[in-house]
Length: 139
Image (cartoon, rainbow, N blue to C red; front, side, top):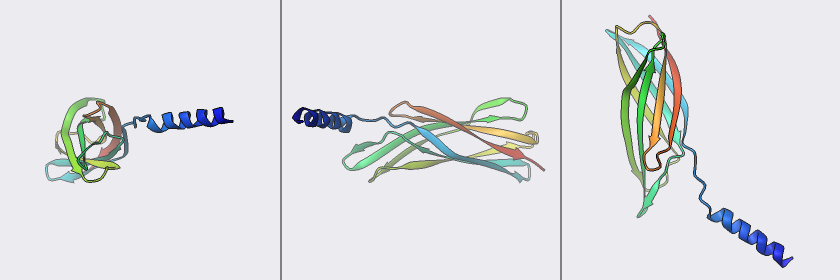
């Protein structure tokens, strides 16, 4: 009986001490476009979680990089039509963050269904994730 108790204790200790790496995850991707005088503006957002947070002296830091690709109705892809960095510090661990993108599309863009692809990198860990969202350009 003592052997089983010792074995269970060792297994629980190993499980408690092992650091499980969380997966970088993108979710709730949304996008839409509205007409302007000379074109459209596409607004998009995505939420991200599972990023690494380095805690130093009670402050947690999050560092993310992102690019946004645009795919037209005819399949042409414009890489990195938008990009940015998020460098956030907080006194508490952050559960998730929202990334927003605004893209100006001039009148040369044709009517139809477009896709936006968010590509996000967790800078400290190097983990990457992508997600897409669609919107329509209409009259």
